[in-house]
Image 1: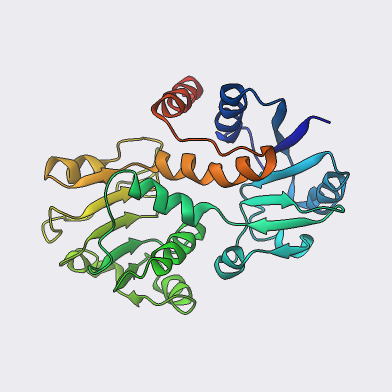
Image 2: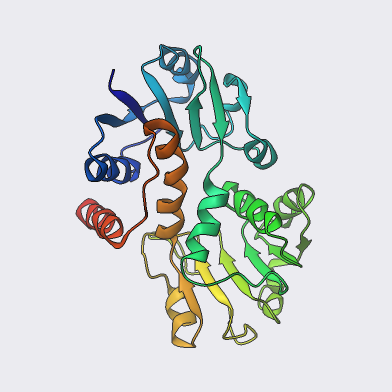
Length: 275
């Protein structure tokens, strides 16, 4: 039987996951299938039941199902449990599914590909959504000495900080948060195509700090361009997307793929073609 996997969401046509996994299937010569499956919210439970036939090795989960899928699964691994969201589902036998979250390790891998993370210096995280939650779990897992978080809605930041060690700052003070930081992460939608730019004065940010943005449309955001111009190492949002895909592919198809420049070029071409 040909191994089958995919991605579910509503909508799902924008997902780059098929381009990533089909590239690896072809590169590694694996007879497998990876497809995008449109699943409206009220179809989610029925869809999961259909996937339990044994033909499906698992699937990725995108918006709006990352949290609502949890009660429909048989178990969660500890990281997904801590984050409270699932982006990867793996069949574990007898029609049972385990929920995982590969965003956190994907984030760390994307940073490590560029530079070592200085755990003894503060990390600054902007945002308090699902991606921010995964990133906060990642920062906590490597023992960052101090994590500073700010969000336009402070209450959401405080809710997030109640689950993981982090100091909440007012959004108006986000420039002051940069003192002595070793890492700056934009996990908001600011800077994305169709959204306002992130207004942030970088004057207090040490030039040795890494600056990363989870946005990949555009790939070079205003934040990254300004940081690079002043000498900071920068990591764009495509790295996290590519690295988070490794865990699922390995579980479904039995081979561990590599994130290469060829894969990156392939996905960038897909982004350009989509406009």
